Amino acid sequence: MKSTASAPAKPPEDQTTTSRALCSRLPELRKKLRFAKSFLRHRLVHVNLQILYSCNYRCTICDFWKPSWRNKPILSAAQAKVISEQLNLLGPQIISIGGGEPMLHPELTAIVSALARHHFPVMITNGSLVTPTLARALFAAGMVEISVSVDYARPDKHDAQRGVAGAYARAIEALKILQANRTHPEQRVNMISVIMNDNLPEVEPLLETCRQLGITYLVTLYSHSRGSKPERLAAADVGEQLLSIKRRHRHFVALRGYLEKFTEAVAENGIGQCQAGRDLWNIDSQGDVGLCIDRLEDPVGNILSEDVFELEHRLLERHRGNQCRDCWTSCRGSIEAVRHGRSKLGNLFDYYQMTRLVHLNGAF
Ligand SMILES: C[S@@+](CC[C@H](N)C(=O)[O-])C[C@H]1O[C@@H](n2cnc3c(N)ncnc32)[C@H](O)[C@@H]1O
Ligand code: SF4
Ligand code: SF4
Image (tube, rainbow, N blue to C red; front, side):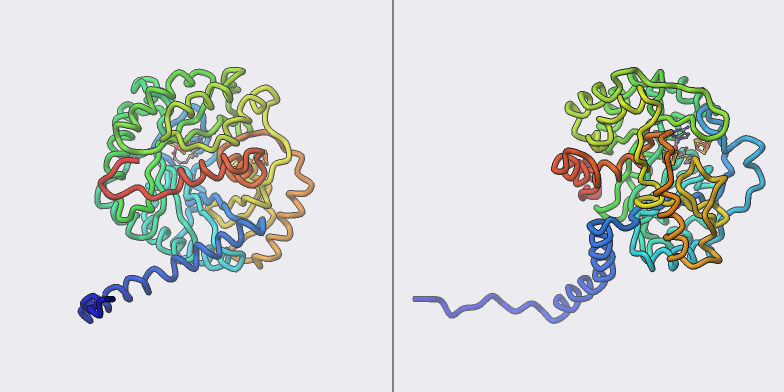
């Protein structure tokens, strides 16, 4: 005979707590659904935002610390709010906060809050200024992912590249602090390396450090296309080598479709059919909107004072006429791999690994 006994009803306060928790997740769920729609409709999904150009490091691969970049205006939190609202008219985006060194910005937490209202803020940092209090504040403000740049496994080589003694030790400490101070399993901490002529052998030792820290690993390909930087072309078979390393280390979460074009990018000094201006925008610390961080000198307009749909139109025009093939950095390469790469399923799987939950106090 079927039992008539039913499970005891939940105490009313439990039900209230559950529905409150659900209600508080609704805006986040809505944001994700709108993002998925934008993604499927091939709308803008990624924006690089430089909030300032000052830096406390002196990297050999970068120009932002040099005199010509000094005294540029910094973006205020109020301006970041305007940018967040404007971009929201196009849909939510992953907004990559960078610079210069973004952690030098006095209003960084307020900027993250303003962006997180409609978008998914992520950040790249040299790691020099991370503290437990700031890490927690940034994650609590809605930061989704923080990547710390580490280019060599040998501390002396990383320090020399970054132009500051102790840079390696600070970066590793920053990664530990960030990983320990996440406030939600959706938040991710990565190490990221710029692949150049002399650091491919460093990748597996760096991956071992990431494994010990319980974090994931990404790469980007060196670009000499902005300013006055030397060519530092990686090995001719860099793509094959990185793919083979990826097969051995599941926490190397860079997309296979991105890595497999490294060899062509090195052989041909870049990759054609760039999708910047369509898949990706760049916004600088004055609100100027352009194709990418390597084309800052030629904006199509300013998002703080102009209509965002007009800017979208101009950037699409610029994109259509753009013959540039000067780089294969991860900001363009990752999105192009997911949207236009050959191995759709493989790239989607990698994208899932790049974004899936990592339990608090747990390792990837
Ligand atoms: C411009 S930095 C800004 C964030 C922060 N200052 C840092 O270094 O992580 C953003 C990323 O670009 C990388 N980068 C710098 N110069 C580069 C270049 N010439 N080609 C490719 N990536 C570069 C940095 O290592 C970092 O991972
Ligand atoms: S730390 Fe970042 S912004 Fe500063 S000089 Fe190095 S790459 Fe450029
Ligand atoms: S290829 Fe595209 S992303 Fe790279 S420098 Fe040229 S316009 Fe910028």
